[in-house]
Length: 128
Image (cartoon, rainbow, N blue to C red; front, side):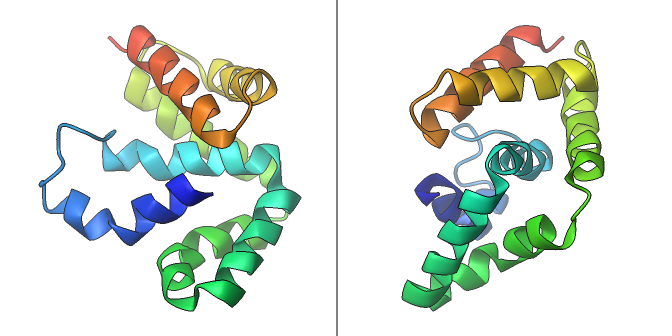
């Protein structure tokens, strides 16, 4: 959760290009965060509510992401949409493979940050 909040809170800095070489392309970051959040949607939404209560200014940065997770009750459609964006970016893997690897990374990692690192490693190895 901290990684997600930090990204969204400092996204303006990233978009200005100041950290261009250190982060993933912005067009895939949100779809990947959504895919990982959907793996434990209820717990993530609960954590967003804690952020909302304790850190309202920070929550304002992630509220659109939270709303998107909350509003899309048919999370399979949202998952398919986000996996399609990532698949198109990679160019060599299918949406189904993206979802499979997200699930695998979540199952085999101790936390979200470690799971994301594994997935980005996989994604970079598959990109043409």
